[in-house]
Each structure stands twice: as structure tokens, then as C-alpha cells.
Image 1 (cartoon, rainbow, N blue to C red):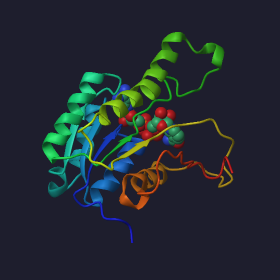
Image 2: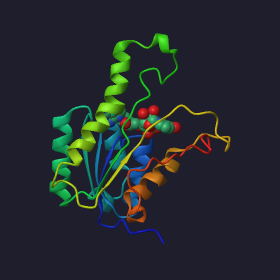
Image 3: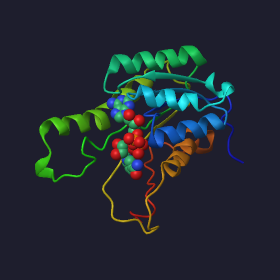
Length: 193
Ligand SMILES: NC(=O)c1ccc[n+]([C@@H]2O[C@H](COP(=O)([O-])OP(=O)(O)OC[C@H]3O[C@@H](n4cnc5c(N)ncnc54)[C@H](O)[C@@H]3O)[C@@H](O)[C@H]2O)c1
């Protein structure tokens, strides 16, 4: 039986869409309390409006750009203040760039490179470094970070869904993964097998 998530408090970045949205809705359904952030305020509102009244009281949403340290710090602080603790953080905000990766390397302008690296590299660094400041998270706590690598077509002959990634994120946040630490999990339909 899966470990209970009732009363656990998690922070999910990038929760207005994709993997973050799927992780958030799964965690809410299993009884967790959530601090949710994204740059997309409308997406966050839409998500909360889809929840029933009981679940609405179990989420805090905030428009936050994870590349802005002060905003991240304040969001973590208000989440802890509202729910009393933070058990884990899933960093699922990310970007494939303004052209969704559909260009050749020589077409990538420095500005675009900086944008992608800021969101996908510096952003998670800021979130993790703020979350791990002594006294903020429960110990032991969980950090799960979403990432991407270029891979060949998967043997499963289809793309993964956001929910299939979220299922692994939820496992990593839960007590079911209590002996998993410092590990990279590949969720790629066997592309790297
Ligand atoms: N979907 C896939 O198959 C897949 C696979 C591997 C990796 N990825 C990568 O993982 C990341 C997330 O994928 P997804 O499918 O969930 O994408 P998505 O675009 O559906 O969701 C990402 C969310 O992050 C938010 N976001 C972007 N920049 C932000 C910032 N600076 N601060 C806060 N929130 C921000 C967006 O508004 C969006 O809601 C992307 O970088 C994507 O390239 C995606």
C-alpha cells in the first residue's frame, strides 16, 4: 500500500501546467497540502477553480518567477507560515525556450540561451538553495527536480504523459522513497535502456 500523504506539505513549482499540474492534482487527491507557484497566474487560478471546496483550502497559490530569489524565498516562507511545515519541494517549472527547441544550434541567440539557462538551471538552484536553508524544511525532507535530456525514440513507441512523470515525482516526495537519496531517475519509456 502506498505511503499516506495526508497532512504532508509540499511545494510544487511550475504547477499551472504539464508535469507540475499533474503532480499537484495527484498530491491534492491523496490528501497533501500544497504551496503552488508558477509565472502563469491565470493557469494557477484555473487549476484552483477546478478543485472542490475542501481541496481549495488545502492549497496556497502564488505567482512566482523561480529565477527571482527574493520572490522564491517569500513564497516558501508564506507556504510554511500557512501550513506549519514543508515536507518536500518538487521543482517542475521549466521551459523548452520560446521556439520549443525547434531550431538549429547556430540559430540560438545569446538572449535565448540565457533565458533557458536562467529558468532551467539557475531557477532550480535558487529554489533548492532557499528550500535547504536551515530551519525551513522538515528533516528528513524531499527534493525532486524535473529535467530533460535529448534521447532517441523510446522503445515503448510513444511519448510519456505528464501524469507518468508526476507519478514518479509523487513517489520521490513520499515516504515510499525514504531510502532514495541523491539519485537520478530516468523516466523515458526505455530510451536509455
Ligand atoms: N513534457 C515532456 O515530455 C518533457 C520531458 C522532459 C522534460 N521536459 C521539460 O520539463 C519542463 C516542464 O515540462 P512540462 O511539460 O511540465 O512543461 P509545461 O510548459 O507544461 O509546464 C512548465 C510550467 O513551468 C512554468 N514556468 C516556466 N518558467 C517559469 C519560471 N521562471 N518560474 C515559475 N514557473 C515557470 C510555466 O508557466 C508552466 O506552467 C520543461 O522545461 C520541459 O522542456 C518536458
